[in-house]
Image (cartoon, rainbow, N blue to C red):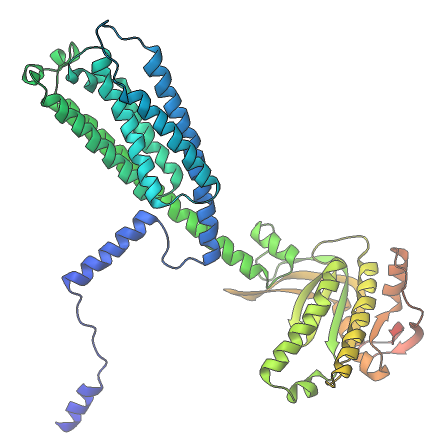
Length: 473
C-alpha cells in the first residue's frame, strides 16, 4: 500500500478545471484582441509602423470629414425653405463652423502623429452630431412636423460616416460609430414621438406613410437594423483585414531578419519568389571563388574565452565583409573563422575576376593594419590566408524538408580552398591562380602593389598537375 501511495504522490498534477470567471476572462481577452485586431506579441518596430500608418489614415479621414461638412453646407444653404415663416435654427451653421475647426485641428495633430483614442471618440460623436443636427433642422427649415425629418435622405450619410471609420483599420471605431448612429436615430424617433399631436402621425399603413409625414415603427426599425448590419459587417471586415495586415507585417519582418543569413541578392530573390528553392536544383555560372581564413585560429581560440572568440570573429567579419560587398561580391558561407565569398555567382557581371582581385588586395591591406593594432596592444597577432580561383560553378539549394541551405559547388571553389591552405606552406597572405589574374587584367584590373610574385609550374596539395600561381606576401 505504501508503494501505491508513493506512486500516487509522484503522479503529474492535473490542472484544475477552469471556473466561469476564468472563461469570462478568456473571452474578454479574445474580444479585446478582436476589437483592436492587434496580436498579443508584436515587435516594437512593427507597432511603430502600424501607428504611423494609422496616423496617416487619420489624416485622410480628416480630409474626407472636410468634404462631408462642405457637402452639408452646400445642401443647407442652397436649398431654400418652403415657408416664409420658417426660422432657420442658428445652431446648425455654428455646428458646421465648430466641426470644420475641429477637423482642421485634428488633421494638424494627425500630421504630428498625436491623434489618440479620446480625440477619435470626439471626432466620431461630432460626425454623428453633424448629420443628425442637419436632419433635425429640416422640419424647422421647411416648417413641417418633426415626423417629416424621419424621411430625410440625409440619413444615408450615416452609412457614409460608418464606412469612413473603416479607414482607421480599428474595428472598435466602426462599432462605436455604428452604435452612435443607431442611438442618435433612436433619439430623433423619440423626439418626433414626444411632440404635441404626434399620435396623429402614427401609422402601420405603408401607403399612408409614403404620402405624408407619418411615423411607421416597422420602417424605422428596418433603418436601425440596416445601420446595425452594415456596422457589424464592416467591423468584421476591418478586423479580418487588420489581422491579415499584421500577419503580413510579421511575415515580412521575419523574412527581413532571415535575409541576414543569406546573401542580399539571394535573399531578395527568395522574397520575390524568383529563386530556385527546391533542393537538388540549381544553375551554372562563371564566377570567382575566394576562401578567407585566419591562420592558426584554432590554437589562438584555445587561449581565449568563448565570448572573446566570438568578439574576435565579429571583428574579423566586420572588416572583410564590407570589402567583399563593396567589390560586388557575396558571402556564400561562414565556416568557423573561414569565409567563402563569390563574385559573379548570384548576380552575374563581366568584371567578376577583377572585382575579386581588388577585394583580395584590400582584405590583405586591412588585415595588415589590424595585425599592427593588435601588436601595439600586446595582443596575439593575426595573419590572413586567402585563396582565389575562377571558373564554372553550380549554384543551388541542398538539404531536406524544412532545413535548406544555399551552396556553391565546383572546381573553382575546391581550388580556392586548396590555394588558401597553400598560403601556410609558402608563408604568404594570398594565393591566386595565374588564370584568374590574367582574366582580371583583361577585365580592367590594375594591381595596386608590385610585391606580388608569379610562380610558374607549382604543385599544390589536392590539385592535380602543376599550376601557375600569383603570390601575395
